[in-house]
Length: 316
Image (cartoon, rainbow, N blue to C red; front, side, top):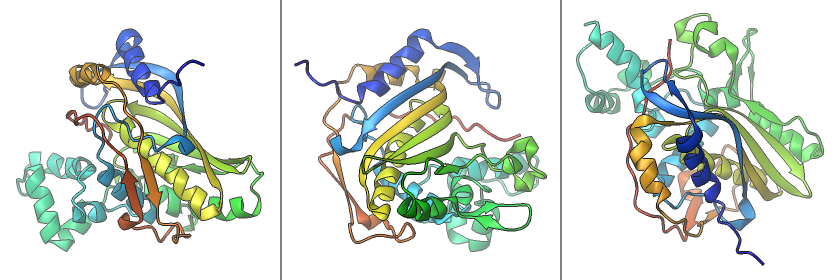
């Protein structure tokens, strides 16, 4: 029998496909060039290991904290900042910097901005709220009538009662909160959701989750997204009482920014190593009770990290 192909090659082959066959585009809000393909898919069988990429070290601590933050339904990045996770700092700083450049607020670089937020709760409340992003839409989708909808709690409750149904979707794409469709700028998210919606399904006693990602930064963002939604799949399987099945990752626009080309070429020279295992505290049965300490990864031996500058897209 032929040797089994490591599942990480799905990701690496997509990187190569984009470099070799992608179409040149320009990021509308930054002017950064990128290469792009449209409509791709990857499958990860979660019984065969946790898909934390091994061809470069991935920041798992940040992934876990970010997912806990999403599950909380919060829009302020306070929790992340307090736990020294700074993956959303740039989006909080962006509107402040715009006013700073107009001379309307005190001059501060990003590091000073975050230090001020840590020291001053009022400053944190005013400037570190990035609008109704992922967690808000998952847990507190705002309706025109003033009602909020907890999509995720609905999915969990219904799966327990009617596992055979096929309509368990959670959407972060709320037109009322996206750019020019929003009533005011204050109603708009800091960035239109890139990982747009996910679909939870029970088949043969296993819970699987498919993510549709409309826009995918393949070098920096996607390794995070693979691990984050795989972990969400495992969490949902645990709280609903099912075995984990697959994480299916479906892409719209999958792209590599030009300033990441050298890093991607380095990563493509590396050979994947075995995926690690992740242990989740089996005592936790409620989606609202997970803490960072409830997760433990074993057997993660990746290649060294490869750094790249984030492209802060989004906004009017």
